[in-house]
Length: 66
Image (tube, rainbow, N blue to C red; front, side, top):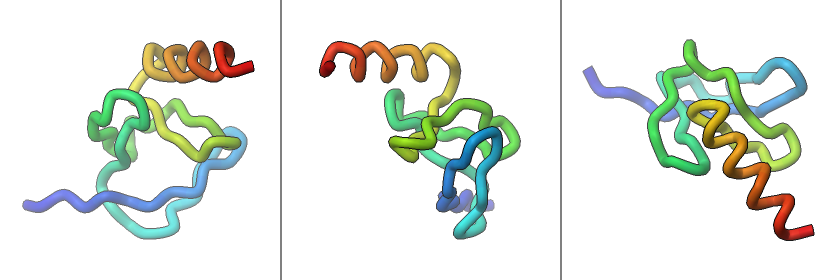
């Protein structure tokens, strides 16, 4: 069975599936995130994160740019 990458619009506390699929890619680690396991994202950047670890890494990167 081939997996299909979904296209998602991230919103506050939810997300909208624009194109059906099985997973999205973490913006930090590049790991596949099954949609049923997707819990971490950034609405402003429209990025998904595999876990709170990757979300924290991105947060720290953005904090350094300020």
